[in-house]
Length: 215
Image 1: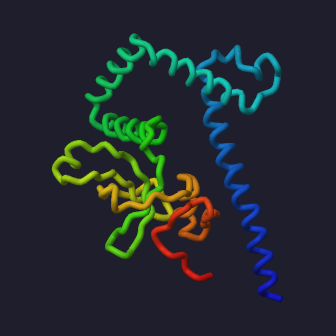
Image 2: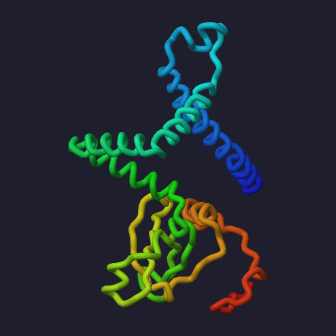
């Protein structure tokens, strides 16, 4: 009886906990974006002429602001202004480090590159016979490839349960195994400590390097 109650309790938690976390995060993001309304003079705020506040209006304003910023920075004048702004921040010690780290992270996450976080690879690390899930971040590494004489790829080894931290290793391409799972599926696997395993249809892969273990 106690085991059955515990199973029901866990099942209920698994339903409500993700939902609650999602609601909290979405409300936080909407509230954060609603702060963009400070860019509009107070007399033009919706609550001033409607008498009520409109939650989420800042989201629309934020999207419009991002689009306008993207359009402006895509031309020559915008790029010149951005270069001057970055040059100014580069002279401020603390701001320089924070801005540089944030920019590099954003460029990696939102990169349109075909190789950045587009492949989930399996490599033998930290020793032969032990496999780690990694994300390919780059395949063209001129000097390293030239000095090692190997066609190496840069692999990001994430830590668990926080996949945003980790380290980079250079692995010969021939020593990597490309997996069928998507990046988001691999992230779920890492964050769940290996509990949430993505569904895989082995019939989609014609050849396997290893014999599947008996179930």
